[in-house]
Amino acid sequence: MNCSCRTYKEAVMTDVFLTDAQIKLRGQTRDYMAQEVTPLAEKIDRDDVVPETLVRKLLAPPLRLTAMSVPKDYNGMGLSTLDVCVVAEQVGYACPALIPLVEIAQLFAHGLLFGGTEQQKKNYLTRLANGMVGCYALTDEGPGSDPAGMKSTAAKTEKGYVLNGRKRLVTFADISEFYILFAKTSPEKGGKGISGFILEGKPGGLVFESHAQTMGLRGHRAFNIRLDNLFVPEQNLLGKADEGLKLALEILNTTRISLAAGFTGLAAAAFDTAVKFAKQRTVAGKPIMENQAISFPLSELAARIDASRLLTYRVALMHDKGMRHKKETSLAKFYAAETLVSAVELASRVLGAYGASPDYPVERYLRDAFSWIAAQGTIEVQKLVVSREL
Ligand SMILES: Cc1cc2nc3c(=O)[nH]c(=O)nc-3n(C[C@H](O)[C@H](O)[C@H](O)COP(=O)(O)OP(=O)(O)OC[C@H]3O[C@@H](n4cnc5c(N)ncnc54)[C@H](O)[C@@H]3O)c2cc1C
Image 1: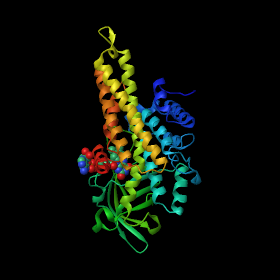
Image 2: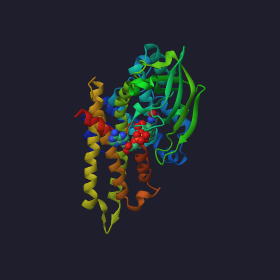
Image 3: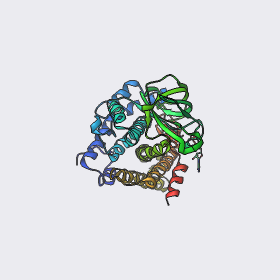
């Protein structure tokens, strides 16, 4: 079979589960990322910005990163969740700072698919598919793990709603043309009084307070935003009033799948760097790979990365078959996050002092991993979700 796999072993591991079209998609994405993105990954980290030209390239054919989950009826690519995972893993491998671009498109598209009226779908999904960017603002000024406790409010007026409050960590809010945003329409009802809204453009009352600085995943830009008497017209309510939290969680239950694939991609990048180094680095006359203290932890990590990929593929297939997958999504997400943490830690140890050197990507991978794992819900919150389903 003609495929540009990194190793023969990877091909054997995953190709059993993929169609020929998915194997081709993986190879094309990998080749594209290797040519267009990998050479820029270090500069993106150093400058803390993804060049606008690169963003535009990634939104255009062949990748169309924001159009992947948009159905063909709205001019999208109509890819399956498993297809999206195949792409997300390659993006995570090459440059994790770009995964948030994939993720906000997933969040926005699924928000419309799950909660939008036909009119809203036609309007926003078509434009998303044509390369516009949409983002997702759920996390409030309080703890992100407790969205029911959000403080942002949306007061009903004659023609719509007036929003006040603060949203944190809104990824790529600066380049987004649209937002899905959540606020309390019935604060007295707690989590059962939240509604979703669609914002278009940068309306008056949407105030950018600060760029959230992070030690890693640099280049992905997240912003802290204030809602200052921000008016949203009635027709921009997303889903039913007071049912927004259910919608927000349904969206996350789907988009966490491709995020797990992105984590697996970065774990694989750290693993490949460590294996290559261990085979080349000679200490006391033999490659360090010949010491079991190095090779056995790498073997264990190989198993974890395979398991992480398989858990992700399983839940992607469950979603594509229309099955319920709350437990399986959170299993895949926390397992992939923990695998990523193990991978960057082991890679750093295998490289010795080079693990901290900017001459190797491992120190960047370490910073990326720890800046990233809380996105769309922490490891602990995913375990909480699983435990409630046991
Ligand atoms: C890279 C990145 C991008 C992001 N992009 C967006 C975005 O675009 N839009 C958006 O809305 N949000 C975004 N977020 C926010 C993200 O969803 C939150 O960071 C996440 O939900 C965790 O919230 P927190 O950081 O406030 O942690 P907290 O909720 O304050 O949690 C702190 C600690 O307490 C633990 N904890 C909390 N509750 C429990 C519990 N019940 N049991 C055990 N432990 C618990 C947590 O696991 C964590 O260890 C992003 C975050 C990151 C890292």
